[in-house]
Length: 460
Picture 1 (cartoon, one colour):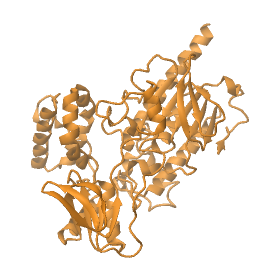
Picture 2: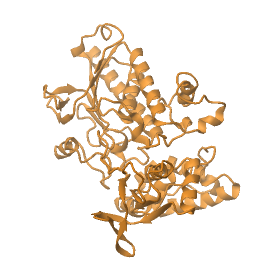
Picture 3: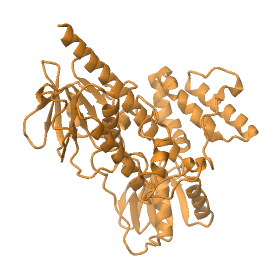
Picture 4: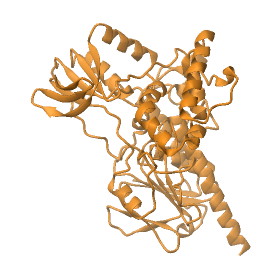
């Protein structure tokens, strides 16, 4: 599908003279980047968005589970950081027919379905596009197979249509966890006596609750390598509660940071403010702390701390958390700390702290979090050619805060790895607010580059 400009031509500038920008991927990260470019990059340009999937379902990247609930509050889901309450405003106006109208600020702490959030993001994308009559936007249902840096400094993309390479001044890789959903073994339509759900995150818990409430299972076992389950959101949501209450500078070591966090949480408990606000403040410091850690401390974090950290940052809505507690109290859901070795005829073979055992189940559903799509053929080719570098923990691509790939600065066309692709460099870059902030920061970088180029041409 191709979207043509609202005017007959992009400000009557010849298309072949427009700077070209490519976005590979059309989930939340890709669409957020497109919106940011349309709003923050004020120079005329030609934008091409590649994705083989004809559908635009942006919520799947940030916690849209089977029940359709996005695991972020209304207050945190604005697609424009300059308009922090934009999503709530949209729900009261354009989205009123799709959801229960908001009644006061308390509803900014509500949770909405992925369908509603996707509609909001796509409408804002369409509006941003209509407002830019000087920008040509094209959507290509193609698979990008390679990106090459040419002698002229431009980046040339090759796609599955084999129509020849196209040169771009900037390329944004926004494939997140992959352009296609990971296959899962679904439960049968008939009721299963015992279902194993692999994973211990928000998606896994939500799927387990759905299986019980729909009657598709009478018992569910959650199997995860860490054994940790997500903690709850605060009832009405809280902002960042400064850890400076304990009157010490924020530490620069992993051990010191978590000692600081525990002490601050104890202060919060005594004050009755809850640990969630303390964790929100800790996440503000996360990037600075991460940059100060050595490689071995980062690896220690990945091995020992990350599961605990994830269980406190990726939280369940309180209603779901209470449902999980009730289900576990009556034995409808059990949680196991184990590594899944393989499927066997009567269930799954597990490695547990006590040894190897078979968990007898009638169905298995895999809800484990997929890693960032760094092992796709496209990414492997870029790494092989030296255009991308994996981070030290092999979680993603080494990038700066804007998503620009490290080592590519000043080498011609800009190359970015956005959102979850940068998880090894940027903590929490898989969350909607951080993805939006990064997209606008990157768009500002592109605006400055194009402005500098224009000034250079005028001077020449």
